[in-house]
Amino acid sequence: MSDMVPAPPREMTVVYQVEELAKAEQRLRRDGGRLGLVPTMGALHDGHMSLVRASLARCEATAVSIFVNPAQFAPHEDFRRYPRMLEADCKLLAAAGADLVFAPAADDLYPGDFSTWVEPPAAARLWEGECRPGHFRGVATIVLKLLNLFQPDVAFFGQKDFQQARVIRRMVADLNLPVEIDIQPTVRDADGLALSSRNAYLSPAERENGLALWRTLRRAAEAVDGGARDGRELAAMMVQTMIDGGVTRIDYAAVADPETLEPLETVRRPLVLLVAAWVGSTRLIDNLVME
Ligand code: PAF
Image (cartoon, rainbow, N blue to C red; front, side, top):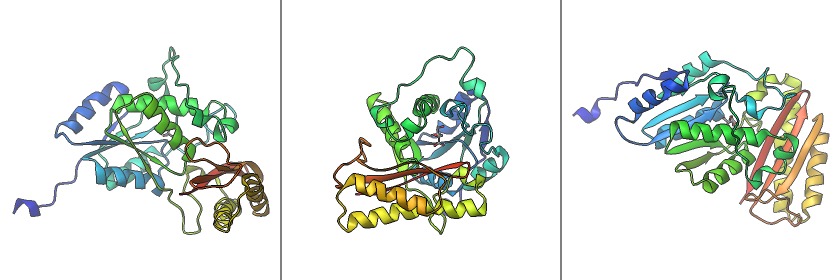
């Protein structure tokens, strides 16, 4: 009979300081079971929420970190204007059923005497690594700190940041971290635009031009299916498709090995198609994996 009584909704705890976190986690782990961690920079959209849902489905408790990590932004990048909406994020997370939100201040995670950094793996060298020097050092360092702070059983990341997911998986393997990394598929709007907190910067016209990224990836995939074999020619075709689609500046278009992220001279599967381009002052990235 008691099986039929729905479990009462759990209260979500919001923690702002590293020193409060251990206690909150102990409470979560009291019943045993798996702890899932969803690291985010906030301004949550359905891509993030799909990670939360995956964690809720796989783990008995779900924690979400919300921290716009200054260490992964170069001084000229959008750290200052990155959208911050903690209250709205917490409402979404509470409604979804998350158990714990960790939203620390920067100087709590990076106090004045902080001086230890993670040297990211080889997968960080090209593409985002070249366009955003220091970015993956900042990502790897904060992700390692969060994994240490939470010691989750599973940590969830989106495939939308394909290279980031590779870098994190490699770091976890290389450093023997006792955590499973679960990569969830990219969530797209109906027209194909990959969800990103940065989409909030786009005017309607820019958003239209932003669709060129997904169109380019699909055209390139069709070309692969149609027998395209030259990796450089395919990448050049991707650049041209993005230019035709109205993007303002292209950082890269790549046909790469999905493990090493090295460019493929001869197209063969599995592969990943990667693009990064600007529409106005907004930088967008996207990818498509062909198994
Ligand atoms: O993907 C992100 O939102 C961030 O890079 C991450 C993994 C939360 C680290 O700051």
